[in-house]
Length: 122
Image 1 (cartoon, rainbow, N blue to C red):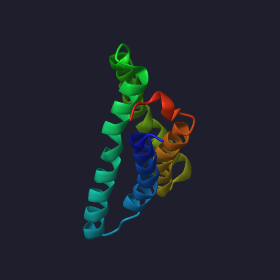
Image 2 (image 1 turned 90 degrees about the horizontal axis):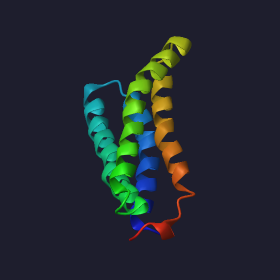
Image 3 (image 1 turned 60 degrees about the vertical axis):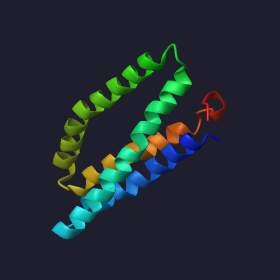
């Protein structure tokens, strides 16, 4: 198994509960601590994802593959607030927003399962 692929999957699975825990804090001290943990864990995955995309696509298509990946991340940043705001309006419960945000990394980890580690260099 590719170590980078494993690290990416594990970090995505750690981000999900940390997202919910961060959103449930009520004191400034706890918010500061969980904010640091949330920031750290959420950025651990990004460089590994970029490298995996480049390795999987190969030298000829690495830039196109990463550009496409960045396009989808930017679209999520544009669509996310609309969907999360809609869920807040619909439910009247702000904690639902954090659960929906936590679903993204879980979905990402699930989508890593079919990735063939043999096609990605160690």
